[in-house]
Image (tube, rainbow, N blue to C red):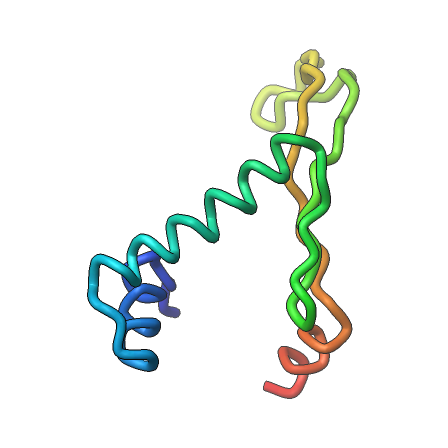
Length: 95
């Protein structure tokens, strides 16, 4: 299984579009910064044909330590979620 890194994405941009290494890295950083800032501001990020990122607020609850079984408080938190688009799900299911 391969991991796709920022460098891999930047190299793809460089190879496909003839960008310089600096410009391709900068472009990837701008894209991820924009997604991050939108999520921080509680905005959904929809990428057509790919999916939707959004932040969910989870309230505090009682859980259990799986190792010991002792009840523990799970604090309230915000989590990022991703829901793939129908097109994305269809492409993935074909493999």
